[in-house]
Length: 494
Ligand SMILES: Cc1cc2nc3c(=O)[nH]c(=O)nc-3n(C[C@H](O)[C@H](O)[C@H](O)COP(=O)(O)OP(=O)(O)OC[C@H]3O[C@@H](n4cnc5c(N)ncnc54)[C@H](O)[C@@H]3O)c2cc1C
Image (cartoon, rainbow, N blue to C red):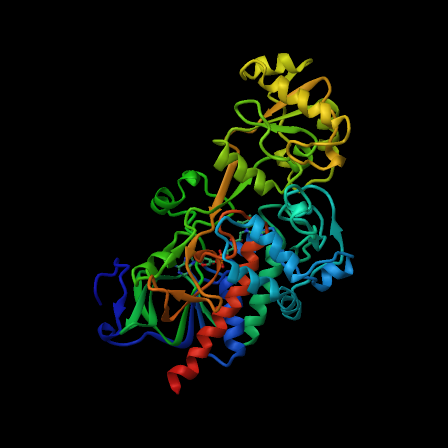
């Protein structure tokens, strides 16, 4: 075989013998991979999943587990929330752009209730309870929560607020270590196994094999040996984002240099590179999710200011939006200004992220003193607090639209938490795919035999983000990828 470090496609003519064969071959056993495997197997295909680590799971099994679903799911209905595909689409188009893929978002919203039912039918448990507090996640095992700022400015005036963060039930959670994502992956991996899906581990996919312009297999390395794996009907790429590929981050999403988060080291962009070498098109490579290490129960009760002492986001919104506003538009500079009462109340409230309850760096009796201690330009923080307090006294925030329940004048003693450089994130861009999860060539045509889903593709997020959209579009379009790859079966035979 030719140079084994090459990422260029290998011609099938150069394959002397196939080491493995299946109808559908899937690279990566996380959320996109497992959902593709289930649907391909149900469509009658013989399925082989190749996973680089020693077990299924990927980032999905570590995840908090939000799956972004709506349009009137049985869980939303049982908990008294009204939603429709059109309402969900209005939110997603506004919050996930600019440049959001309307065809994908329409398709995703129209299919969302069916997708919820599919997950339940495949064993994913959701508890009928709603968590109504600000937070990164529910600290308990509740099944539903706002996860994208739907009930906060500016989106609460664009679409009727409806919570869409659906969380698989998981007891004794620990954020970042043992979350609802496990209870998404476990039943799905069990289902795949029951359907006869084969999986091989410690198998690192590194190259595509082509016959003319059709993808017919994969080269993977296992224990130092290159293996050729034939895919009779289709290859599905599902290897995750490029958050841990230093060179790609520098080229495409430099704001994330040295700050990968909510991803795993295996997210090295390998699928994107392999398909690019075949002429695949890309989309939204600059788009990033940004986590912010701020405690939502504290942020809602204070004000966030930048290096100019000015507020820049409504503090009661989705913390991921706060993260994007901080890193992408305020140079990663943030301070939380809060009075003693609000700090103590916020610290006593329920939270999934108590480790974000940082101690104040500066404490003062007056805003003027605090401003001077923080070295902010004279008059900046004082005028910000004066304007905020003036309106908060009436329960209003005409500047940024924080909800009345959180508008309370900031009193004394007053403190500031130093939240500079408190961000991390993962990439949202990747292979451009159709609604049938076909990988599109730069010409706009599908590359025959090649399908993809999950964070190696550009999904429903083009710039903005809502928690749950990664597991959401990864599972939704993972299913499509499996079906499309299995359909190649009849095309190949007939
Ligand atoms: C702590 C944490 C919390 C999160 N919370 C949420 C949340 O609540 N909601 C949400 O939507 N998202 C969340 N995410 C993000 C989400 O988990 C990922 O974006 C999602 O799992 C991506 O799906 P995927 O199928 O593309 O990748 P993964 O689920 O990571 O699966 C990719 C798999 O491919 C394997 N692989 C990589 N390269 C190769 C290769 N060359 N050959 C073979 N196999 C390979 C990997 O080992 C991995 O198993 C969270 C992530 C983390 C880490």
